Image: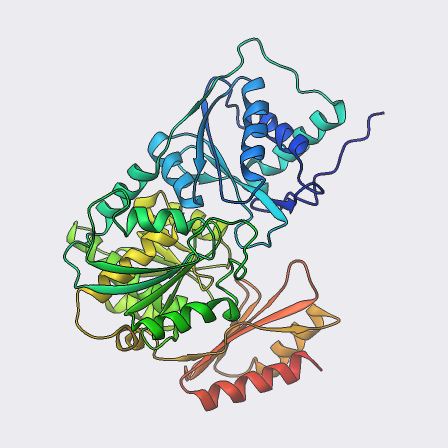
Length: 468
């Protein structure tokens, strides 16, 4: 009996990520390319293939194309792309595709993000598990059988059309002059920022862009391309202050997330950005005749987000944490926009997909259409004080959750289990959520309160209970 090779070390719930040469190899990628065609029934169709600046991405793109064409699909090679460029191409061309990226993971990693036509994500529940199983069989057999009508390979550069599309979504030409520091982290924003916000391909906007780490370098020589970690924002914060800039923008490695720094060098929370962009998208949808535009937010964004949405005439819809949930609910509800605490921002006019660049453009528009500094603008959207994510290593996750429920569930405190446990008292002066990690023995605490003293007292009480 043939022993199947195990790809489970690199196949995750929503994408593929592994260590190059160990858990993701040229042979495994070639097999995945063939399996992708078979699983999604793409023989005779065109598949989009691109990759980020990691050294292995070109070789992996070639290998994937070899497997895919062998099974009868045509391949359109897009070359160097950000992840949201793949979504753009998949949406406009109505084609399935893959981009080679490991997002914010360290340099030794690479991976694959896959979409069906129309930028519909491929997850373990919607085809990725089947791709894995078929690829393992090809690897075990040691050969990918060729169909009679093998596919062909061609190339196309989509950077300019992607840039024009984004500029059509947000008109920045009438903005006041802004000085912007952009930290690309040696990732793909080093290519897309000059194209979209600069004058590399299109007419200049009223922006003075100060580039930070725009050189495409998958070894990440300056800092990891993960702006979610505060230490990776320090260079940007210092540069904003040094240059007297109006705003700082940081992108992760594949540029599908953006993080914002104000003119004082302080981070503007993703919840505040969600509220800021939601206000703009609600107004745009209402102007087009939509009575009650829907905005999606996950359950650990600030309470200020649904409050603003309701006040502006929209309808907030709360979801679990995770982009697959957001995208599914976006489609189901016909939502105009969705935001997460992790700085993923989703747009109906971008095929319900996430794009860091489009979110950054909305923030620039909001800042550029008024005279005040970003710190003042940001405070309008951050009326509460939040803890950020506090992780606790505990021996028994369920026992710790049960202790928290027993301690805090009392008269007037509502507890729901949409994603972990969320505690909300009737007086509304605080709330908190506890979520167990899917992969580690950690409980993740996110809390928010009306003032710092209340928040600190709440966090101490919760940690004392769950760490007992």
